[in-house]
Amino acid sequence: MTPLPKVCYEIFVRSFCDSNGDRIGDLNGITSRLDYLRELGIEALWLTPVHPSPSYHKYDVLDYYAIDPEYGTLDDFKRLLREAHQRGIQVYLDLIINHTSVLHPWFEEARQSAQSPYRSYYWWMNQEQIDRLGVAVRSQTADSREVYPWHDNADDPEKYYGLFFKGMPDLNYDSANLRTEIRQIMDFWLNEMGVDGFRLDAARHIYPEWLKEKNHAFWEEFGQVVESTRKGTYTVGEVWAPAQEVAPYFKGLKAAFHFDLSFEIQLLLLRGRDKGLVEKLLTDYTIFEEHNRDFIDATMLTNHDQNRIGSVVGGDIRKMKLAAALLLTLPGQPYLYYGEEIGMLGMKPDPRIREPFLWTDERDDPQRPLWIKPRHSRRANVRALALQQPDPDSLFNHYKRLIALRKSHPALGQIIRPNLAAFPLDDTEWLAYYRPHDEQSAWVLHNLSGQTKYLAHEQIGLEKHQLLFATYPTTLLRDAPLEVPPYGSVVLGYAPPAE
Ligand SMILES: [Ca+2]
Ligand SMILES: [Ca+2]
View 1 (tube, rainbow, N blue to C red):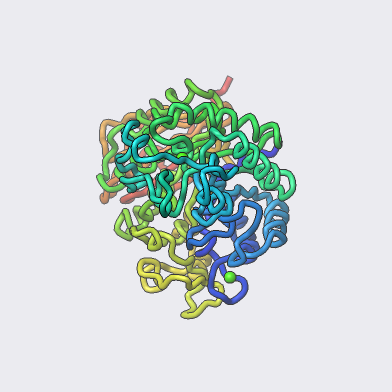
View 2 (view 1 turned 120 degrees about the vertical axis):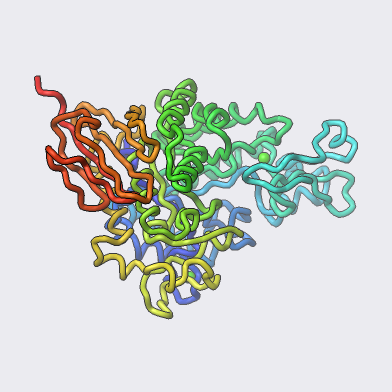
């Protein structure tokens, strides 16, 4: 079985790298940057949707068996996979099966007549049925602001359900034929194309709100189908909800994104004080474990639907370094969002958190996508990668060092059955925790404040330590207190006790 990647990377394909001069990021552009991703230490890629679609983000699919010509061809995709695999990088496909585009042939057929064989692929009701069920109006959720999810279909007496907006009709998994279609799509991508896993979009919405108790059974069956289609396939679900609601999805999906943690880390950085992050994580693990002891906690600072971490912390590179140190020393399977490693900035609306990657400082770097004129991540306020690579103090090299650290120390890189213990220090401007491991345990300390802080050796309480990592050069004299500059992090390794 393929090993579980220790550090993953989300690419918003349109904005990453252009290969053919149309200034739209594409698959060959990604392939041309695989050496960069390997240098950074990435072991898996999650690509945002690549199928033909009428939108710039492509989360409304027209054809599950093709690549949008803007991004390339199936052959380009195969080459990307081959080249990625040669570098020890897995590739996950973003599978959007909660809805299709309103222009997908299934829906175009379905909307023609109630007798269409595709009618049952979607949700249809007349106003009376909608009112009887009391589902005409929904409450907004973190991932959808749609309040009126029922949409008119010309002079059809029935409306169709589209949770996100009228351009994305929701699929109806009570249809056995639809389930067969999805099975064939998965088989194609796993066995004919050879992807390593799926990121499952909008997993918590697969059934509509009035039938949401059917969601968990759906994903359990899905998990079995994936496993029988190709054993060992990785799956990660987008369940944008509190941990309690995420937990049951681990019965069917191997991993789920930890949105709660993402927001806790952001709050921690804004407050400069810890309010029980480790305790919160330990509680979440207990909840997850009830459903699957081998759950994979997919962690991130932010993704393509959240304000970029660089902007959340007001563009302060020191706080971005602290954010990186938190993500990469806590348990879980971390996902970097492209450009985070060079300090890219971005605040909603959505296109503004998905701006082009800055490869070089050239005014008109031909590989830099230009589908949108950047407002946040401009050369004036984000140092391009080429400038950061030779600078040992750059954010990029900080990420690179942390990733290498995580990969080389089993205590830090453990994903299944997360090893974490609190290490209370009586001062909420510190965050300290312990990552126990048979080989070598690690002790992690973060200074959350804007002041240099000192910690006496007695407070660490353990004798045989070795400095594994420090954001800033740190003194570790036996007789002097540990000195940690503002927003600095320190990782110490402890050998197992001598027999
Ligand atoms: Ca292009
Ligand atoms: Ca749905």
